Length: 91
Image (cartoon, rainbow, N blue to C red; front, side, top):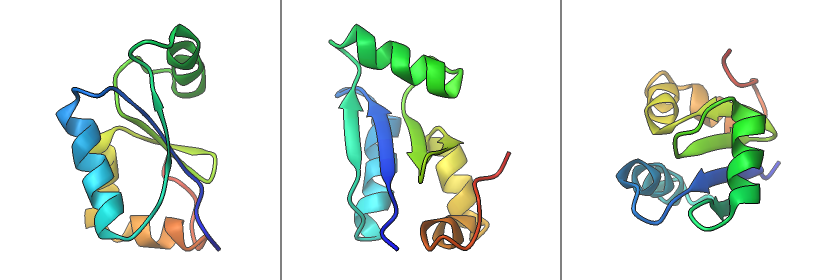
């Protein structure tokens, strides 16, 4: 199963770069929406996540949260399970 990864980002965000670096290390591809100049994408992000900060990360349609949430999930071993379809995103 190839995971579907969606990132809402801005070009200047160091946390966005950190999240993308982790996905790159794992050899993963993602879809990225830069919300800087796109109010519709910014609103879509807020509607989907309830948050206005970037990055907002979704894996297989499930909201993971931001960069810190992603790194914590990875440190606990949950990210690889989620990417493999063996688990669902934490609440």
